[in-house]
Amino acid sequence: MVQFGVIAHGGAGSSEELTDGVKMAVETGFKILESGKDAIDAAMETVRVLEDDGRYNAGSGSLFRMDGKTIEMDAAIMTSAGSLGAVLAIRNVKNPVLVARAVCETPHVVLAGPGAGAFARRGGFRSFHGTSRKSRGGFLKTKEMAEEDRQERTNPGWKGMGAGKLSTDTVGAVALDMKGVFAVAVSTGGFSPMMVGRVGDTPLIGCGFYAGTFGGVAVTGLGEEIIRRMLAGHVYSRIETGMDVEAACTNGIHLFPDDVPVGIIALTRQGFSVCSNRGMAHYELLKEV
Ligand code: GLY
Image (cartoon, rainbow, N blue to C red; front, side, top):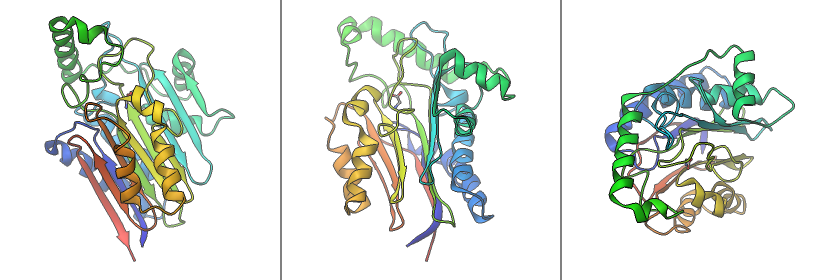
């Protein structure tokens, strides 16, 4: 049985070489849990470290939109104790996951676009313009591929592109604290190529994330396909009805054709699962009894 702990991933398509950053993030979250603090703080801090790393597609490493200059990010946080907050297409903040956490303290659960940005400014989050070399490189590569293959560019699915070929995807963490509360936190710079204003699965409850009494689920991959299958809710409902966590995640991955990159992490009191049809850097620290 898991007493407390945290698991995290660096996105569908992230190579093993990126495991060091996920390990550092998980160690940060685990220390928070060890000190008796809440799962929401552990999940949030784990994701904050990944947002600040710059190698993952979230926070400082977020990808450009198709105009080659705009960065819009999505993030969400949820606990089995009832906290819920998300930001959609937020610009000019360093840590969207911290803003999502702040949304949990308002009467709302979701803030979007300029309103989310204004809320962040009022809350003391300073304006930040993150354009890492990786973001620029990812954009130029996407542009090159699009120019080489116009047909794929005009295909609304863009299924063969994005994570796995060009970039990593969403980052996510699931934590269980000593009081038995589960928390999930997710953050992304989107999925390249993408239009300005596009929102993926990450900040949508039951699609990119879910936390309940039986566990927490965080998802990564091509948002448009994940939303259609409400993947996090699909996996959680199987766990809730007694399916083993590993089987529930495998079941979720099998909903997708091979050309759609997707990954899932899930944590329950009985154990955890990490599942992806691509490489996916991940790490976990669990105190078991
Ligand atoms: N999974 C991240 C996105 O599609 O935006």
